[in-house]
Length: 524
Image 1 (cartoon, rainbow, N blue to C red):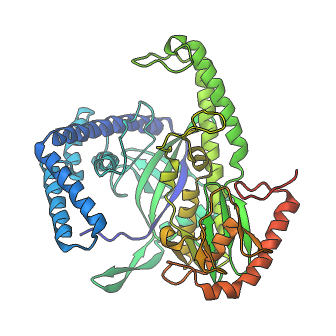
Image 2: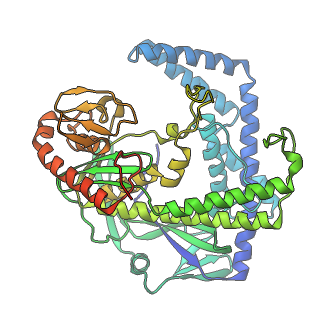
Image 3: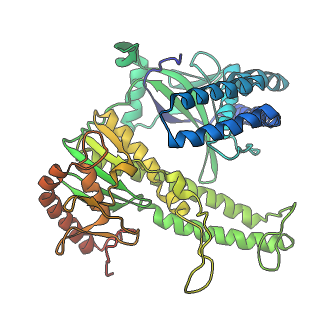
């Protein structure tokens, strides 16, 4: 049975410069990289051996047959028992080839001994577990392949407790006989409050469900373990200590409002509907300028790479197949470091933008409804090859990969959900296939399938509603189970929604805001 874990949060603090400690961290990161790659390679080797077995291929055929039958009859007890039996056989086969997490803890020991036991045993075990989690995604079909870590690309390692190895003691990071202080800014009351709670061992309580009983557990603020992180900021290497702390983060006097809030999230925009406000906004608008800079740097790097490696390209400009050696000029490497910094800045700005937007939405209500979106599927290219009837050329198979990378809607949902639940609200993900917010019309009381190009919903001859805002309105009026919109409530709240909707559209046109994929034409 899994051990119940106490609530925790992370405080990231920069480590003060100490050449000796920084040298130790750099050495350990490289050793951890070797351990990770060794363990991962062992997993891949054993998986290959397992897949050679005839018994494995037989189980795969049986599994596919049972899965097809279950698609037609999902509640058939015989098929469910057969599926359970197959799962047990798969598990036995994995155990035979030691494709388990704890096997990696044995494999990492000789590698650790090879490097003179410089790395703490707890850190080595965590690295082995990290390799398992990466490999398990491939093993269970959640990823197509796994990657080894290149030299100097290992960025972090962590322990298991704050008693051995790397640990936090009185605002210092201690390792063996070396210690250095943490940089605590005087204008950072959040970090000061957290560290004061740790020093005073401030008590807190939380509840767990055990055997259908709710228990209250009393605990104190303490550092569970320390994670050491290397970051390259503006071309300089800096080290940070992520303190994983048992407890709740300090409250910033924020409160959730009252009422339902509907959220219709797209690849690059967010529509919000509540009883007090209706809004349509772009996600992470501030990353737009950096995206342009990134594109220009990538073009420069491509030109440099082509100029230095003409033998690796064919006449038509495509990369030649087969083994190649690449020559990277000094200019190319400088541009590469500049590109890395731009991506870092973009990530920081994107996260701050999402957090700021989430904080603004908290006051609108205490129950948030949103459709469960599979953004991973939207990243994939189209499988079907199509030709344009006008030009006769092939239509591009690209979909929303770049947009999702820049705007990160899944990250926004994660941040908002965590904030809503922390302040006592509810965050409900409705079923997209049953709710069909983009197709339902509460006036006609039936579903109307619309193409993606149609950005306005026609309620009647005189009333046109922006499609995304109307979907958020329907989600706001969802029933308790989240399966469909409550038509009676829709009729009651629609006049107020229409008024707020028109105000928002006028405001967008007045400010000349370009909302992506909204259908709102702004004359600049």
